[in-house]
Image (cartoon, one colour):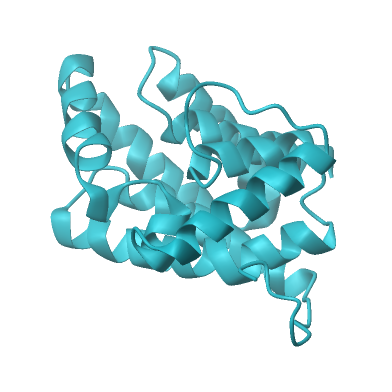
Length: 188
């Protein structure tokens, strides 16, 4: 369990604004991912190879252009599920409630539905609770599929990272399925 938590924290770091430690974080994540499927490792190795081919300043520029300033490829899970609607607001409140109940302190100024924040939550707290499994099944998997599609179309350098993360969450959902009872949705 500790290993998967570390993997999720590393994915969070990889998907944040690039730092000089990015290559090391990707390599460590790939190493820790080996027991969760070789295809995921290959996706991270491909990303690692790609980021080594471009100057760091260009990587920062690409991140800003394709993730920070483009809503369709942002990392806001609720935006991909609901757009800027009342349902997203309810989802944000629900996430903040879950975080508060777990004594999780959000770092930085990101909204609770930011993928990096959710990954930090899973890395520091249980990813196996009922709420967490609902977040994975109802929110992360569908939104990561949308983000991946946008990234593929835009030839976004982070496409392989999203694919590896999506595969990991699908595997986690298959290993720990949750039946969603009427009225038990994370979105309600």
